[in-house]
Length: 118
Image (tube, rainbow, N blue to C red; front, side, top):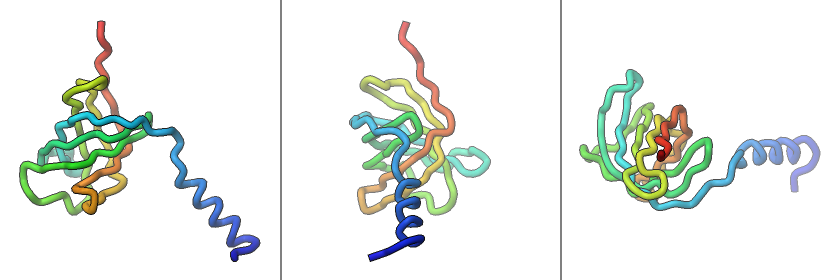
């Protein structure tokens, strides 16, 4: 059992990893663009937005136009193709890559565009 400073440091680290916002569960198709540091498109694909919050989301089941998944620093841009967020576009920092889930990407939104009806 940890005591004193070690236990406090572990609790503080765990608190840092908690989400600032709860995620909304969805199942929305998205078109993805993989961007390099110069924001040039290096790959394209499709996936499913599985959850989102005001700060980020999770895209799973990604299928790329070119088979190779990104291996170095990259950003994702996506557009929601259907459902209640249809037309939403986002430029994202990739914060997690999980190939075990069938090419899943955790993203933090940098810019979001959402067209309002009316």
